[in-house]
Image (cartoon, rainbow, N blue to C red; front, side, top):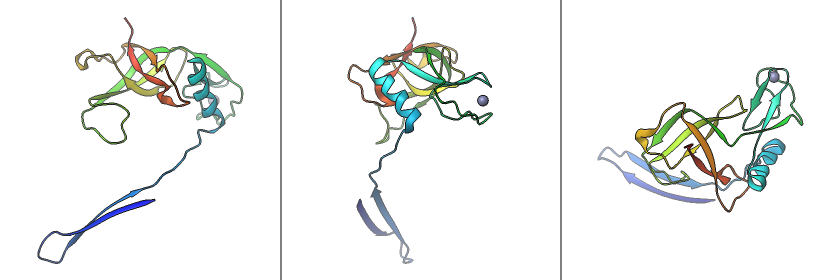
Length: 159
Ligand SMILES: [Zn+2]
């Protein structure tokens, strides 16, 4: 852990501002279900979902428990398409250190064909004025991939 700090007097009333920054390295486990999803994305370039047979809901990204009926969905894997429909989007013009691409960056929620839920990712190869809810999109994979959601570079419009 690294701590950088600076104290600054802001006026003549003996008031100070403490500027601090704490870098906290961390690791996050994707869990059994998330890890399988990510390794299949990396190795086979396929999207897997988890289906609740009782509710007929296909979760992408997958989860182990149905959020509606709380059933465990072990081994209810289904493959969904790498194409889908844009449900909504936003455009970020303010760069941050954590964002995975240059600004402006377009984030979208894509419902992959065969999935019930939306999948959050970036959009590319699209002009801002051409963005439309309901537009058809296709995943573009990176040539070199980690077991990460960023194995997908972005979603581009289907021609
Ligand atoms: Zn369910």
